[in-house]
Length: 409
Ligand SMILES: [Zn+2]
Figure (cartoon, rainbow, N blue to C red):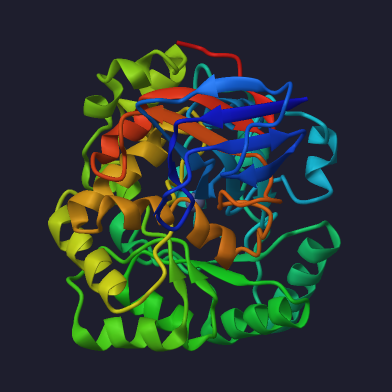
């Protein structure tokens, strides 16, 4: 079956292009520009903009999370601790009603280290299944020595991990100062083990000092931006020189400071796509570090971007618990795009951060671009998000691997 989208403004993952026609043949984009193939189903996109499906480069997810993400045009979620390694996602093969996923498997952490401090009390809170808790909020296996770190990485890779995640969290901005974290020799051993397997090593870091530890250890990516101090020329230079990408997750920083996602949730384009439990979660917040300054964090992101660091859109959305709130699968990607533009990226730069840049950094060569031969992961929105970023929420159509998602609103 062939579908041809005509009269579209096309953002190809890098820039707006002159062509206005995209041909979808099966699960692939077969042509950009050129004639309309005979017998194809025509979709007239006049007034709308076609984008590559969006990529969230920091989640902890579930089938429900992947389904919700797709309704917001997020066609790929990259999990930074969880169960959806290549072994874990075998059960998802052939499904086109949910977003695609890659995963680190379990993250390396210290005994009683992050994210242990986020889950106090006994048993799952109301509305959350024990299965959710087990799958997504379980403590990662703790590591105490460099050889244990190497063995841990080997196990994740054997289980199909797409990259390796390492928690370097000392608790400052999460209301748990003094939290145990792995020693630098453990971190270095884990990074070297990941690299021996040809895998990227990605660090959870929320402070400047742990960010420096991560880049010193040879990390490939930072899954957050530091938020404890303003940036300095020295730390920006160290991050640039290391070549890491940075996935700021500004929507999480905002939540940690105590801001909820209530303003986003009030947008009918968001609320119409969210379940009551996710609406409740989006209207919650982490609220662990009220002394934080979001303007300062946004200035750090802009400084890193201007210095040439690859910035990726990510959210750190996980399970529907209000104390992990201010976030919702899919919806928060649009929030993050808006925050990046508020920080000073242009709308086109923000859109690259959710499409071609994460695809390139994660080696997902089949997606993130609208080019002939790419996987047909596409998002069609009313208006022009290359000038008005919030237009990404005016979702008209979503295709996942060439399969058109039934319209929900
Ligand atoms: Zn996370």
